[in-house]
Image 1 (cartoon, rainbow, N blue to C red):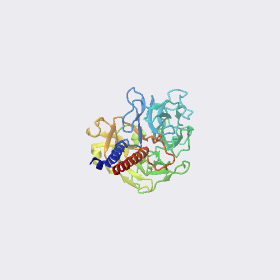
Image 2: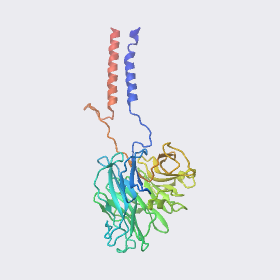
Image 3: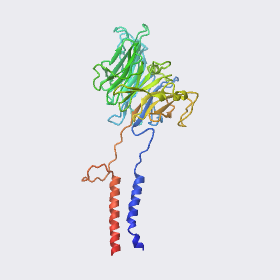
Image 4: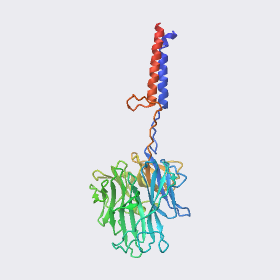
Length: 437
């Protein structure tokens, strides 16, 4: 009677092996961080005696203990590169450096001393956003002309916005200047080469305050920006990859906002996120322009297609939605996986929800889901700038490789399972042979 069931033993062995392989196989898991999202960067300019800082956090919002960089000068903007060939990240951040001596302590391209200079600084961080000791000389931007006269330039200069190119060599920057004496102003959209430390021909240069002026790189290498050259309103422009010396083109379409302000481009380069600051009480552009941390007010936000310029109101973030009644979310940047928009929440009436580790009665950084429109609290660190893509992890290679096998994508676990199945089937044949004997 026992011999009748001997043939089941090999099958049980096979089932056990398959069960072990199933439990040992890595399973995909859903997480806010995702497999494509890396460190997040912030700027912090405290009112206390603490130094101004560029801060980093993990992809899930967990703050790092060490700042990426510190400065005694006001930090106005920061941008982080895609992963470098060394599996690190480069961060370029802008500071406003006071000029207090005659001759001036820094050269802003002026014969006469100015009040402040706009300065670009660079730091390198590892895959967790922690600083790596490097030697990088600050780059001082030349001051802008405020009335077209080379003798009349801005006495105060600052950079409110920065954006790294996908290859990590170029940085798009928006610069503003104001002359205290003449009350004239100027604005420009420039490209800084972080390899050669040179600034190219301005994409946009104006002898007046262009309150719409802001832009950024898309992952396909194109540049998108908004500009309001006159009082009639603004437009959304683009520069094709590699054509920075050419004439920018207007992105045609059913463009709704009269005064658009560029925020970011989605990681697949298909949509642009903009704010309409032409509405009553919407000051999104001023929040960016003056590097303030605060609510942007009653703003509408839109997705604009890079293909045909069609625009779509994000109703869940519109100023009259129920979301805005309960909490004011100010969007800042797409997550690298494209699933979220990171930004800052300013609670209304101390509304409370989300992660228990975050105090929701004060401003905090959150991720807005683009699919179910929920908000996930990340950290009470605010001043978020960008969310960098994760460093790709190379797949592990089996120590024993059969060179004659074709590259089918099968991993070592599968090969091992097939080997055990063959052994088990061989054992089954042997058992049956003994039974027949």
